[in-house]
Amino acid sequence: MSSKAYIALIIATLCWGGNTVAGKLAIGHISPMAFTFLRWVFAVAMIFAISLPQLIRDWPIVRQRLPYFFVLGSVGYTAFNVFLYTALKHTSAINAAVIQAGIPMVIFVLNFMLFRTRVFVGQIAGFCLTIAGVGLLASHGDPISLLQLDMNVGDAIMLLAVLAYAIYTVILRWKPAVDWRTLMAIPAFFALVSSVPLIGWEVSQDTVLWPDQTGWVLVFYAAIFASLVAQILFIRGVEQIGANRAGLFINLVPVFGTLLSVAVLGETLHTYQLIALFLTLAGIAVAERKKTPAS
Image (cartoon, rainbow, N blue to C red):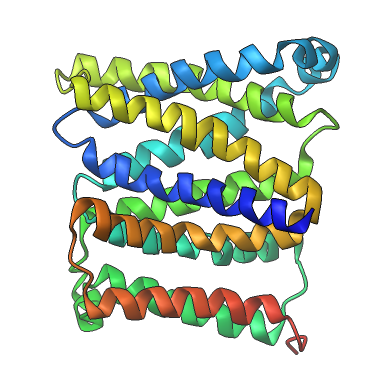
């Protein structure tokens, strides 16, 4: 059972890593808001097709928690992807992938700030390593430039994506007792709803770029693999080995994102990017040890 869970989790994170590459490939083929909107149009259709009977059974609970599900969908699904796809217009896919490695540390900080979660020395050390990695990446290997606020706008937007997904993860602690299909479908529906004003804004600004043939391929990839397949496989992995063990596999997302960026996009992997990836993943590993409470 564990080996099947590992395979499922690896494929899921591979799909999510590919979403970063898809966002970079989309430039010139589809605009960010159109990409986000169309992705959720098709994803919602597929998710509802496999979830409708369960949604009907869970509807009494869902109806009482509609604002909660709206926040889940609009922040974790829509905001994260809008920031990701927009950031990729200004920064490399490798940078976007590595910055995502900071998500666990942001989750740690939010949990401490909101719930006073116990802090450990290892977590503090891990947090510092991760910040160092992201700082190195954002400064393109020149940390001194951060003192002059010489930061790539794409990297800054990517930090907002990290914050959005961390908020989504933290508020999952308040999820109601519903089936996993409902927990996937209702936020996806609200992701679609919250993306409507964004595509409307893009149309009003005359900046919308509707997909060409390549754009449609990327939309279907994001809808099928990043939205549906990855979610199902990750949930299955959680069911089989538990949330704590499964959560560690999310650390593979920046690894796959980086490797795919080099293999598919032909991006050059610079030494400072490798160091940044090592620092962020090392920070996560150190934080997970949780050996000694901080005084």
